[in-house]
Image 1 (cartoon, helix red, strand yellow):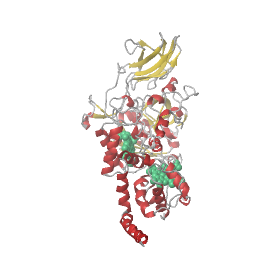
Image 2 (spheres, each protein chain N blue to C red):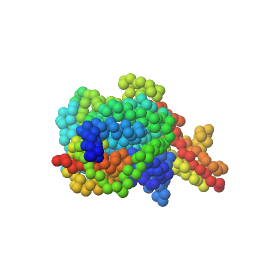
Image 3 (cartoon, rainbow over the protein chains, first blue to last red):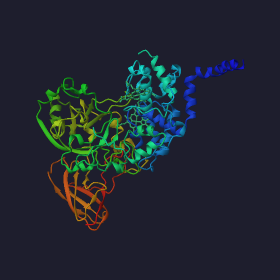
Image 4 (spheres, rainbow over the protein chains, first blue to last red):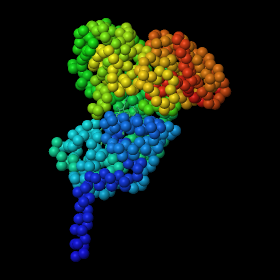
Length: 202
Length: 401
């Protein structure tokens, strides 16, 4: 009895989170991630649309020049809101300042990130409703609105969608100009994006 | 395109971190520091070195200095500077490509490659150098691609005189500037186009050419095929690639790449200082400069004698002297100028160095031109990090004789 009672309550409790999925994921996830990692993720997802990020990491600039540079990029079309721009600028000004050495090893991410893509666990089933926001945040700059294509290939109705494993491996390991997402997105999140893409019609 | 991609300690160290794979992707695969980049690829002859990639996409890659032991820089070792990367090859294929001449002209033109070939053919051997060559040496660092020594090359360019084409179109009285537009496009349409202009005097100069060939071969796509402007003596920001549109105007071109980027202060400035727009002029003529091609940075030399070789050039002047110092500038000795002495091309030089003793030694070089310009120890700082021409320096190790 008590078990039966618990389950519905649990679900009811989760319901708002599912309904508010996109916002919850965007903010909740962000706060859970260390700030340097959030910044690295923004760099990979938003700054490599027009040029590879080596152009960014070879600079050694004072904070005001970083601010001006990030502003210029946003003006030209980099997808960053105010908060993200501040976060990224602060990261760049901290590690890529004028006296930084020739090669800056990016600070190691905490161990929660390690072994995410172990391959040992079976691929989870995706939830399309959660995939929309994740797609928008991470993939849209390169793959376009509704997977229509851009710097990266069109993903809507892409044959790779029929092969869930290949999709997951490609996304988590990266390919060519596409960064690897394995240390950034959980297998569940990749599956959610997959489910959302699968539901698209052209 | 050949890039440095060999595994090295830096890469291993980065990969050891949990964020390693992401970091590696962020670095675009190029994890060599500038010092490592100048080291030769094992087994390859000194002149057959791959380009050093600074930006993987769109490609920005420089020539290792040891390639400059050759007078002409081979096409596949010539530095590559891309704003957006080359246009799709189909869009500039001979069947569809046209050069449009419009604006303040009597007769607007639309010329095919075949139409262009009807003009007199001319060739010029000229240095083409990125305005940001040597940016990495400015202190404090200036934003932009961190070019070291090799965003420069010397090639034989063949094509037709720009002047002949403009005369065919007929210039109106108000004509003062020529706007240049190539076929390359940014991946996101909100990014400004690479639109440039040159003053009419330069456009009408008989040595300014529309080139279709580079070192005798058809212009490679990465170097502007089918048509690239060559403005001998001027920095390469005017040498627009994949040219499709010439527009004769009264004013300079507008837009980011002419009005904001590629500008240089007309008075000395301090880092961080606010500079009024009227004090910033377009980067044009090259400054006097020399580079040491051999021995290469970090080389280990047998004691006794070593031949130091390099190249020197100056935008509109002639190189009259190159000096070498092996005691960090206390004394300078003259190198001999060798090879061809041609306007706009670089001059080769060599210096027989009698090494005394053993250990670490530095070699410095500095050039002087016939206008009295001397290569300075360091170049004036400027916000764009342009026109670096500080004395070139190489450190080597001399073994016991």
